[in-house]
Length: 251
Ligand SMILES: Nc1ncnc2c1ncn2[C@@H]1O[C@H](COP(=O)(O)OP(=O)(O)OP(=O)(O)O)[C@@H](O)[C@H]1O
Image 1 (cartoon, rainbow, N blue to C red):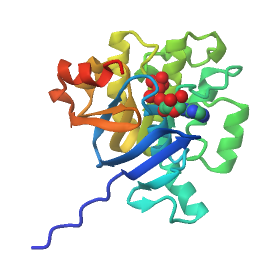
Image 2: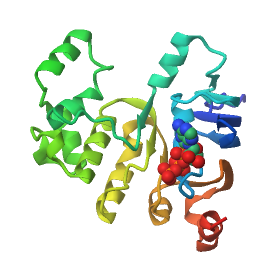
Image 3: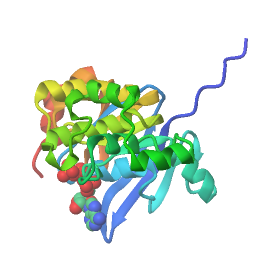
């Protein structure tokens, strides 16, 4: 019997370099992330986590080496194909990219604009649609009361959860998130991180964190970056204190 062909990796980096002037934020990273993997990205401040996530989402282009999405080399495909591939990755940046002056519902629905027919999308920009899906995701992130709240009046952690709700309705195939739990209390952080895989149809998530304990509990794989290089890659439940001591040791 022939084996069915293996699904392509969701993300793949081959010798990827990103440089800012003489400084290499990523210094030759090789990485394969398969469908369904939940990867916690750890490492000291400035080690290259945000840069790595930007390359995975297609927002940053490697200066050397390659970045593949769903098996396709982003540098080798045409502009339109590149856009289609990148649109399948839901990305949450540290800045959250929320519109502060509008109601929470508008920000959540912004995640669905790409899925809706143009007419629905345009009308949703004018009149916020408080439908079941929007209410459900706000309930999931613990903000059922915030449907009509003004975004600018929310706390940092509440805003972070609005951005996660927006991700949940996006219908992405895979998700990358940059410190999505940084402003959350430990219990809420665990709940929100546990939700993230359900925002991706393949269940694949790569998430940067500064809380190793959350990596152990909620992820399948722990990846450690130091000075732009992968120095740790192991099942998350095998992460021990000595790994962390080495990863976070001062230079
Ligand atoms: N736009 C930029 N211009 C110049 N240097 C940059 C730029 N963005 C990042 N860097 C540098 O690249 C390195 C990696 O930055 P990056 O933001 O990826 O690290 P990080 O691990 O996400 O840090 P943190 O945990 O503090 O968010 C750092 O030394 C940073 O100063």
